[in-house]
Length: 77
Image (cartoon, rainbow, N blue to C red; front, side, top):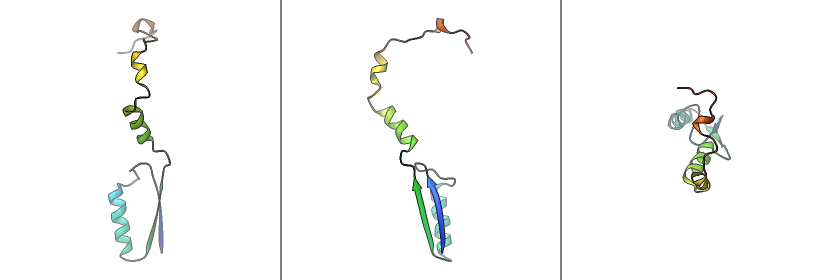
């Protein structure tokens, strides 16, 4: 028996998920394969999407800017 361990972060692995599944399918033709997938408890992409689409930080749009262009010591172009 072959045991494969893969850690997933969201939908990403070192291989594309479809390629990983294809490899597992090919391996199962010759022997029994157990696939152990671990997913990240809090996917970064999901948190980023939640912040972007959520309303928690809408109040920042109404706040006046703390700094202006005049506050810059060096301006890079």
